[in-house]
Length: 337
View 1 (cartoon, rainbow, N blue to C red):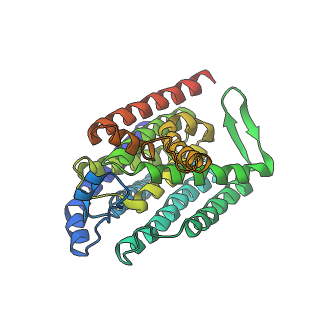
View 2: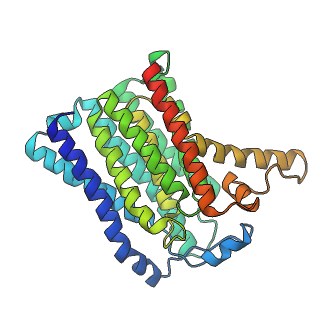
View 3: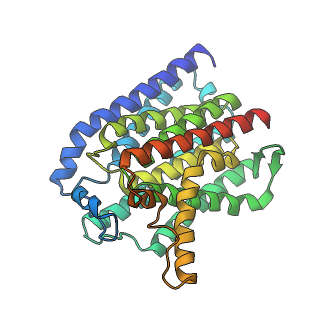
């Protein structure tokens, strides 16, 4: 990485962090004034009721910070040396398409949050409405990559593999699964934001190792924005990211993985998200098979540990540690494979 690239990366990190941090100072009182407070579901842990009314939709903070930092850096790069920012035309498609994937997932989350806080319907969009919108966004992104890239990506120990048209359903499955998983993980103060920050750092390193500078800019902008947001979201949270933020995160992380042609590394990087998702699937399946028995005290998995007596900070620290280990495995797989 040359000196100009290093400067651009540092600018992106500082801009995204400071923008999210400053926005929190003004946006959180504004969200309170608009009465955009979280409605806590009665079936959740009873002590969560004290969080009733905490401003939600805070994902707007880091989404705006992310976009502002990227726009400034791309403009700065264009004024100096635009070519090295994007590389090939396909790299440009992956960057812009990835930003679009994250944003449109964020918009789905925003619609869901808006219905919850304004329409006072706690469940937001119906499961079918959300799924159809997610499928539409994911399919659009997958088709875009397929048309321009012909379905190639790397599989550890197998190298680059051409999936042909099967790339599209695989891509759609990964996107929808990841966005729903990050959405489920957002249930404890700072949990989704901190684990996503770690995942973004891992994808930043992988982007650098593979020479995808545009993806490095996206990853560092995401990491910086999440770090700034966490100043307001760690326990006790002054604002929740809502579905606006959690769905955006899922889209952004998936886009970064596909952007560097390494979607399979999302398995170790997102091991926590997979566990959270599986806990819900297993809980529902076991409940139906046994006619009312529960496998976990409550799902997603973080609520099970809450009901076991773990504090929110202990859960966040432990789950983030698991994510760090998963990211280390991903980096090791990249080196060995």
